[in-house]
Image (cartoon, each protein chain N blue to C red):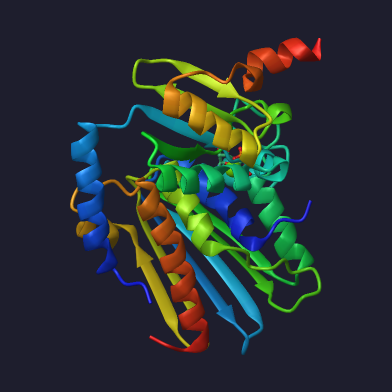
Amino acid sequence: MMQDLAMQTLEILMNSVGAKADTVILRIRESEHDNRIDIEVEDNGCGMSPEMVQKVTDPFTTSRKTRKVGLGVAFMKGLTEQCNGSFDIQSTVGVGTTVRASIQKDHIDAPPMGDLGEMIMYVIQADENIDFRFYYTTDNGNFEFLSEAVKQELEGVSLLEPEILLWIKEYINEGIIHAKEGME
Amino acid sequence: MKSLEDLKKMRELALKKVEMREGGKDYRVVVGMATCGIAAGARPVLNKLVEETAEKDYNCVVTQTGCIGMCVYEPIVEVYGKDGSHTTYVHVDADKAVKILEEHVGKGKVVEEYTVDSVRAREV
Ligand SMILES: Nc1ncnc2c1ncn2[C@@H]1O[C@H](COP(=O)(O)OP(=O)(O)O)[C@@H](O)[C@H]1O
Ligand SMILES: [Mg+2]
């Protein structure tokens, strides 16, 4: 099963949601110049013990009762190994977790980026209360999306209003295109 | 090009709707979106639910959760009513999602043939 990077990243983000994080920061850097894609997910959720961090990259680890095998982290790690990349988890119980994955952008096995706007819409649909921050960087420009800035404009209206969700998805995808083209 | 300014107008519209419907939404529609759900086709289901709800102004919020825990039945959609009712729909696709919104959220009628109980009953 071949998943795009957005959907693999969604799995990592959903772990942060599951870890009861109230702040989740996603940083993605796509560089033609360095021929890399770097993805970083930082959360202030429950964190993991050093033993858990070790075990978590093993595809047979999950703390869940509903499924026997955990896949999100192991898949992401496997992908980085396949694509001349690197993978790292830093975690502290009670403080939070940072997952970093990097791959060679033009590697033959590198999946397409996929729809990041849609992915972020899904994160908000998982928990609208999370302070979610997305920073996207290319060689030509940047884009950022801050859920708290949207909430400020909405003054109490929920992010889960379907029109707002669809707007968020398109706003992000437009911002990404502009960052790639070097427009502000 | 979109900007955060757009949200002011969207806020006004949302508030008008809240006034018309007098308070919170009647239903919460939840899609299972773990890897297994995505592989089984949960994305088009979730997208369709959001688009239809926006277009037809259904009285529900559409959310997603990682794993509902019955991988073989994905895509799974759960509908929670304000009254505490809870229905689990299984093997949902975009067309079934439209029907669930129309019948269940729109008219308060459970679409029996898509529920986990009736699908299970048909399996034996
Ligand atoms: N950001 C995180 N914070 C706390 N625990 C985490 C985090 N990411 C992963 N974990 C732990 O690692 C386990 C394995 O994660 P994963 O590989 O995604 O599989 P799954 O989510 O299906 O269990 C999770 O069940 C959870 O206990
Ligand atoms: Mg996971």
